[in-house]
Length: 259
Image: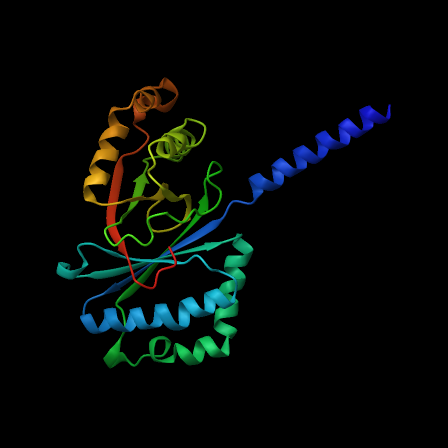
C-alpha cells in the first residue's frame, strides 16, 4: 500500500513538474528603433549600450540582443533591433514600471528620453511581444557570438488565418521542424508566437550562421532533407500552405550586444 502511495505521489510530482516546465515559456519583446540620420543612430546606440542595457542588467535581465541590418549603411531608414527576454508577462510589465521609476536610468538616459524636438534620437519605435515555443521555451545564446562574420537571421512567418497559423506553429514543435534545425546546427536563438504586434497572426524566430556561405549551405541542406520533405508534405499541414508571407532580415550584432 505504501509503495502504491509513494508511486502515486511520484507520478503526481512528475505531472506537476511537467506542467510547471510547460508554463515557464519565456516572453520576448522585439523593439525596432527607426532612424534617418547618423546622429540619431549614434544617440540611440549611446542610450542602448548605456542607460538601457545597464538598467536591464541591474534588474536581472542579462541576455539582451542588439542588432543592425547588414544593409543599414545604405538604407534610407536605418534600424536597430533589440530583443529582450522576460521570464513572464508579469515580469515584462513590472520591468516597464521599474524602468520609469529608476532614478539612475532616468538620469543617465535623460538626453535620449527627454530629447528636444530639434534633436530627436529616432523617428519611430515598433514593439512586438512574443511567447516562446514549447519545444524551445528559453532563449539560447549562440556559440558564434564572438565571430565577427556571424550572420543573425531574423525570420517572420505570417499566416492568412488563425487556424493556419496554429498549424505552422505545430509544424515547428510537434511536427519536428525545430528538431531539424537542431540536427542541422542552425543555432536558433529563439522561436516565438506573436502575442501582440503590427503583423498578426505570425511567428518569429532567429537563427545564426558562421558566415554567408554557411547560411547558404545550411538552408540548401534544410530544403533538400528527407525530413523536411516529409514534414512539408504531411496532409496535416495542408501541403505547407499555412504561411502566405515571409520576411527575412540579415543582421550583425552590435559590439555591445549580450547575444
